[in-house]
Image (cartoon, rainbow, N blue to C red; front, side, top):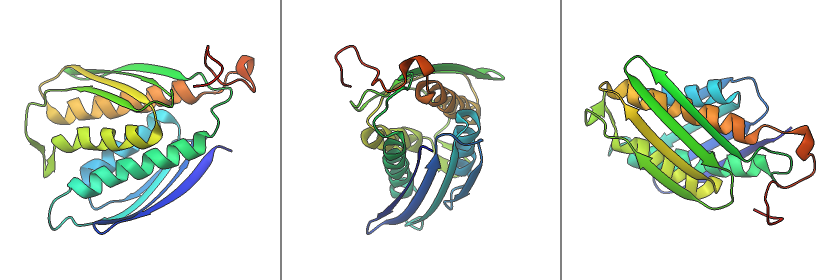
Length: 195
């Protein structure tokens, strides 16, 4: 089974993440951030991964450190669980609509971190969750999962729907990229012999 658990302790946060890439979409979150829990649940469900996150952070200041560090820790757990990447599809993409909103995510489990994030949210916050933190989560994830990730919100006027289509598409693109292809068994998916 491709699974991992990572603990990250800093002056601002204490986080434990576990992930099973071959799961059933189960999730368990204790982050103190209801909206983030809702978004991470979408990644687990649509990615068919089991994800658990327990986080304590300096939320009395704001949510920035907690969200960024959850992204970092989840990225580390993802990379650890993925291992040598032998047999995976490597690339993944998804378009996801939700009412008026539509997002596209494309990614490459390349070993090279890179994020291209394009979303003009229509509000500064969804409830008490600042929309800038969506980018911060993905930047933390990408830098430590070592993937190239392109996120484009193509349309939408409801910020909740914009964010939700992004996280759902991200889950589906991850699922496609990490799926094992029997024809690639034992092979690292690169034309140059290594990622």
